[in-house]
Image 1 (cartoon, one colour):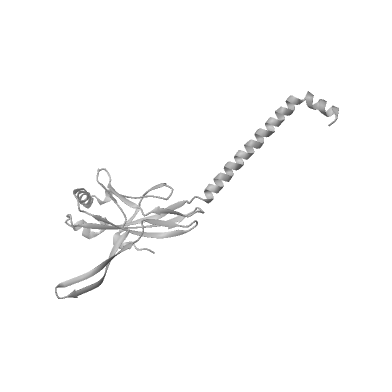
Image 2 (tube, helix red, strand yellow):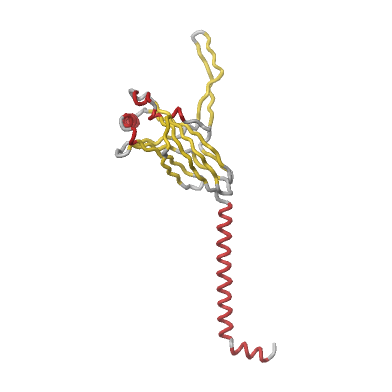
Length: 212
């Protein structure tokens, strides 16, 4: 380094330091923005994005036998939920099979019904004289719906509201005379803790709802 160069640096030390500081700030900012963008990209690659749509409900409330039924603590009402669910993310994810929340608009009457996730099947049935025997197996239908990234599924879930207490009986009896005021909601949560609270608009008779 010759003397003229050294002299130039000495004369312009302040300006050079300022330029160096600005350059460092720009490099640090670029690094921070790049790191944040990369973090978002990685997060998106590792996060499921579950969408629920095309929801319809088969309701026992629309059946003629319900409207004419003399309800008691031995009565029960069946419901069926059908919806499409898809995972728009790249990572696998899951949701719990939804609960159904039924309410009567303008009143405090409501019921929350959990899905049927287990059924029971009898086999080895024998009938000899006055003796009757059989064995029972439990079939587990799982509490969750699992979806790989990019996959979709049409789901049908059954529900049963047993009118075994005064609250459920009072609710069902109130519905008998106020069908137009019944509101239906789907309530669930995915594996990341995101909540879904979706009003159900398409309501059919329970027997008319079939999985396509």
